[in-house]
Image (cartoon, rainbow, N blue to C red; front, side, top):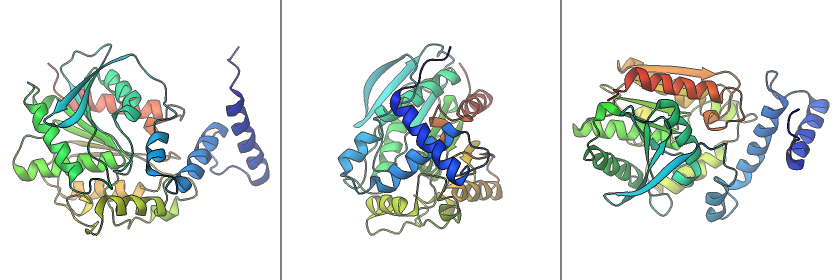
Length: 322
């Protein structure tokens, strides 16, 4: 006998069921659970930027997904706060270097630790994640500077670059791309491979999917525009250092891109994959039907486990073990 759902969950599913009865399913293939989760995120996110920034930062970690047992060791990576996150089964020598999402102005290692730990465990790796500086207190390029500083620190800890998968979701996926480009341009060692989930790589917001998928996803043009103002101030959001769809993308390591076909940043991922292919950098793109933004982090969604397995398989294929 399955456990009885909490009252709040039953109420949310009831409202979603009533809406479906009146209007039909929002997407034909969505389960009632997927539609309910999508609607909660949709309605909260569109109003979230009216809240104080401190509340927004609290809320992103207020409903953590399932956790795996993990040991956390805080470190200072030449002044950048970070954590080593280790789980059962790690020991292959592989390292996950994770850059969290949150529009460059919310999110933290703490808010993303459950997913980071699950991904590290699936990879058989230990994870290193950082709390890079957030906007608007710290504008571009502080985030890239911190990611670069922490990478250089990591390289001095006896870790080989080919042992590292650099990864991130949303703005963290964009920051991953910015860091790869910066490392290449500086002539410094790059990780063995990178994996980016729902990457935000066009801060000019030119993708048609931002409006085309607005009714399904929780990220909207107005929310994204707020994040751009916080990060860039008066600087040009088309700068290739931050909007890497406009950067030179040659000579980069293998990159896996995961994106949902129902998300607003779908075109960011498709354009990035095309630009990488044109530059002859190795890229694998997997667009998951009916999935929303950053879906692999949401263990409740049906394809989250599939995406996690794909990430782990990609790491085992491209990242050197001990």
